[in-house]
Amino acid sequence: QVQLVESGGDSVQAGGSLRLSCAASRYSSSRMCMGWFRQAPGKSREGVAAIYTATGRTRYADSVKGRFGISQDNAKNTLLLEINSLKPEDTAMYYCAAVRSESDYCLLSDWAYNYWGQGTQVTVSS
Image 1 (cartoon, helix red, strand yellow):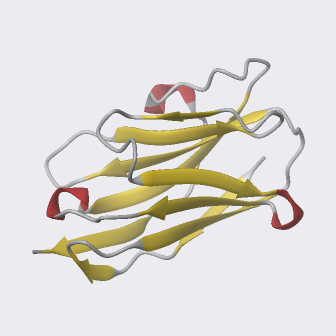
Image 2 (image 1 turned 90 degrees about the vertical axis):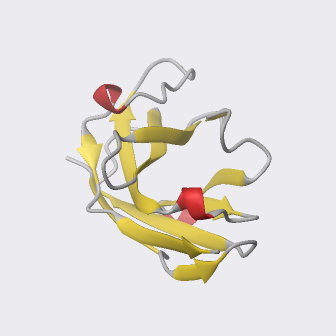
């Protein structure tokens, strides 16, 4: 069982930056895909970034490439998401997710992940 707790969400103005954190506990494997997803009101959940913990290979949704950066702090078992040049359309609940994987090609589809955090809210005003 992996427990995930997100933090770092805030209300910010457009153009600002945020860093989201996801503290992960009870790791049982170093071979995991860990991802960030977001869900805006009335919209389906969208995968924005993922990282394979063993190799650091990353993937990003086209909509966030160049503005979002996913990374991991292995010493702290923490997943990070740097968000720059925030836009009002980035407003959403952001979730951290994880799944054990033997492949370093991490999907950005929520159905592929079986451990989820409770989410942290990001609100961007224009």
